Length: 185
Image (cartoon, rainbow, N blue to C red):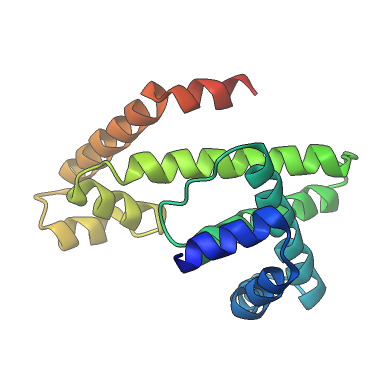
């Protein structure tokens, strides 16, 4: 049994030994991420526990296919939950406060995770060049740097390439049956 299967099955069955091992092996990375992104240790603990609950719910409701490693999947889930929490804090600071119950919150987090998984799945289907171009763009790299990295003739050429890659990615996502199901929610 692979480590990923071991962790997935342990979460599915609620095996306390596996849960403790998941915590021991993966929590410190999540804690470091949250602390570096305006959070406290209690925030990291909440995010980690919510991610485990979310994974448990998904495992109970349907088959979970992890295309990367369990660790990467769990960490991405935690990052998404923490970003969502930061966005809620920004909204609260601007005096727009909306009360949500935990079930609604978990449903939104689950939906975001499904959207992220669909995005990653389709992103991997793009050409290597498109993946590299979009990764640079999404990481805030300027068009000037993209021109230099790929030896494009100009920023116009770089923008056209980005547009074509984004269009291809959008098309791949929209053509997937999962997209129409997610969209209806």
